[in-house]
Image 1 (spheres, rainbow, N blue to C red):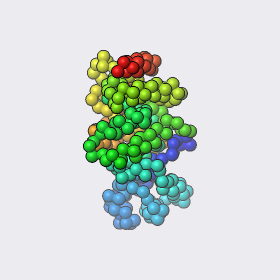
Image 2: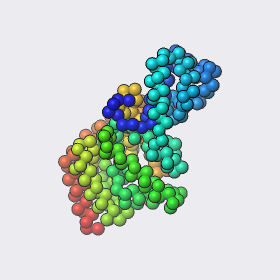
Image 3: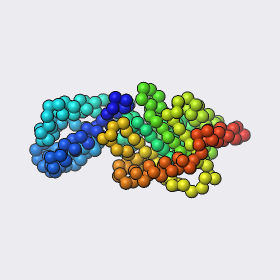
Image 4: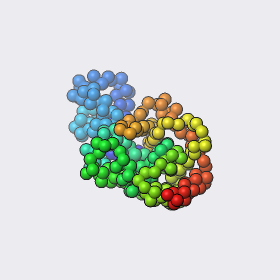
Length: 291
């Protein structure tokens, strides 16, 4: 990772796995062959190479032996492995979420840039506590009341990425419906829209929000909410996250991401400009005062 990259054990585990896979590919070793010499079976090796399973120092040593790595290469990989052992804040909420969503939290924590198309709801990184609470309470009926608080804490903890030493660059295209859908009550919505305007005024250009109004008509992302994450290391490709009302999935297929990135860029360009978007949000805010 670069010196200016945010720190996330999830992203570092992913980079460690990719480096190990590169060494295996360099030698032309199959997963089965590695399994025989190290005791790390094919399924476990695949999970390690994708960053979904952590390595012990001993198992990393076994892989380094199998890949005939020099001492300096071993030391670099071990330093990276040690960083994957940090206990991150999202681990405290593991019981609440799917593995894919927990992985998203870790990836988001280490992303350099996030592009998000949000057609009908304000993105989590930009939500107020009241708005987020209303969203959580309106979610699946299987969410227990006792879990509303921890879910809210999770959503607000994610917003730390907008501040700090290495704030994430955030580009958002908001559908007009996201501004007008009444979440909570009019007071909650006014507070949310005011917060959105405040973020745009305070975040020094690393947060951009553009509105695509109903009048814009059809566009490349119509009906397809998505989030694209980019990272500081050239070794790490972009990833995409798509979420429905009850589930979400991380997508790493290069062609899908390339097409989605192009669609986002075109939709971003078709949306209202930065100044017009701010004026549009402000106008909806003042409309809410009549409710």
